Length: 539
Image (cartoon, rainbow, N blue to C red; front, side, top):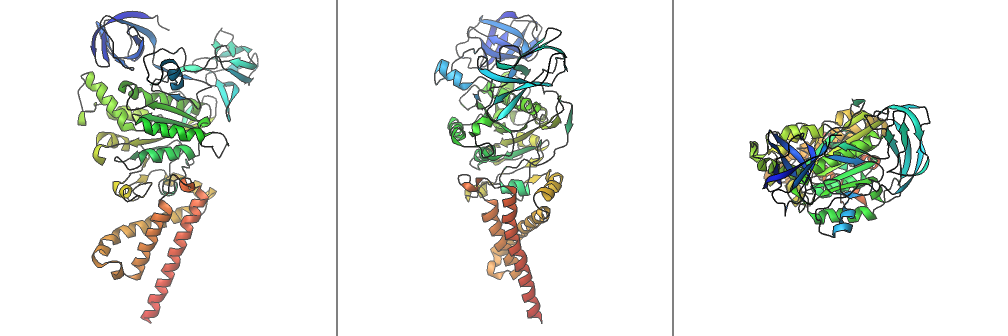
């Protein structure tokens, strides 16, 4: 670790601070001012550096001290993350409330995790065993999970000592023959992807319980989906419903720039809901990263990196993780504000010119991987987008379209007609449906793909018949066409629509198959009837 250095503030512009401190490195963590506000180096000059302050800069003054720490802004990883609510800098909000009250003030917490809590540690290795980065040396019980303790990626050697029984995170669990001590927690730079052996093609679906998604536009495990929609189309409710019911081990939910009342409702629900798979509170498998609209905007830009690093950590432990971010547009707005304060050259609609590359580097951290320990873990992403005025040609939506595998377009017309989820079945798509076709055929039903194609065919026919019906009325249509319109209406209301506040909020794939088979059977019988009737009339 580099030696800490000290300088002073020479100019302030909002959350952007210039210092005379030299010898810093790009993205190095710094402490700014008398209150030790957390900041990061975003630009280097020969006579100083420009810093981005991630906390409220109110009260900062010239000539206050600036200290470099020689390390990047990092996320702390280890047991005790589950069921905790963090801010964008991974500070536990419960601890902040306890120290500062309901209004958060600048404060330094000694640790993100509770290092004094006692855990029961069971080792996997013995003295003399050779270990390397990513290898599991034991586990502690955390809620419904056995939380593995892994060797940091840069460590390897022979085990000299290994703990057993009751331990705390601030005492070494393992000592290597070179003197290295392995603790129950570790830090990782949030902007740097965590290492793995190799990335694997997406395999198997993330079952969301939403029929329109699982049946028509499935999301593959390790894949990425975006949910763009205008104000009031139900993005937040859809993401929260998926977070409650998704078929994954761990849920990381990043509330990025959303209203505080929405997050409070989510937290209240998660505290009382029971996970049907474990019969434990839903929060026991959930981590919340919260940066609401009234929190510092600079920390919003860091919040999604905090969330994705937490997701990668649990992926490296061999879990299947789902990261939901609501919304990426608010993150992009924070990025635009920061870029503007740095006087960088603006791109389209004022966003920085590196918006697309920054989003791509974030999205590519999703995937199915073989971990350093040889396990298979996955990190899937569902990202909501809030395009201004519902304009899907704006830069954030277009940048994500080029990198995501599923596009779930929320339609204002459907939302206004109270059809939820308001996913437009004509404009949405999934690049994973062919990859997952064999899975559904083998595990759910041989007819899955056949009925999916038939369902889409009926919906397309209805769309083409709407214009004719507006002119001649439904009585003016042929019987075959009236059948299409009737069955399509049944598909829309009885199959594609789901109430997020009833027992129908989650529908398992087998039940999904039973419902659509019942509807399509009626359609096929109706076709046979109308065909036979037409033949008799001809005779």
